[in-house]
Length: 167
Image (cartoon, rainbow, N blue to C red; front, top):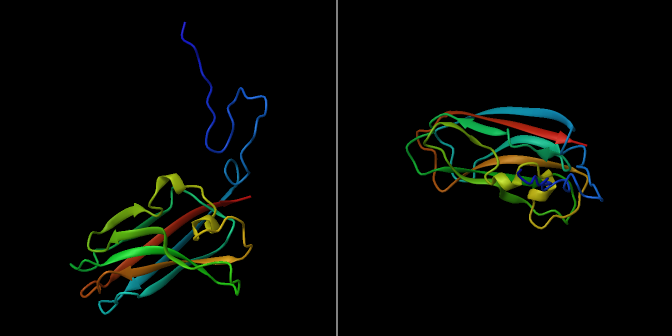
């Protein structure tokens, strides 16, 4: 007869633990919402062109189902970075232009993971900001920025579907 071992997860202790710790509501059973934003790029868009994709509360958890979809946006080496920006006057929150994802190739159309590192799926939005360990309790902007090269002939559509949960 095989021995059965019960394991926990990164958000809960093991099922046989005497000190059972349940997940926060946003991790297991929280209310899921979706923010969908579509923008049109222009052939003249250049490096540092920035598109506001969402403004969300700092404590939402960005889920792994979130995606970015875009047309073929020219034959250049342009890439997109997805960042988090401070919308408040708080000085303890640093803007991070590539906090969520970087290096998304613009010249190849398709749908890609919104969050680059799967280990970050389910993180609170403020946890993507450099060094932020506590909830600043404010809204944060999620932006898309063109990096590395101009789009040149790259007029087209970009859509972000951001699935998130909150406690």
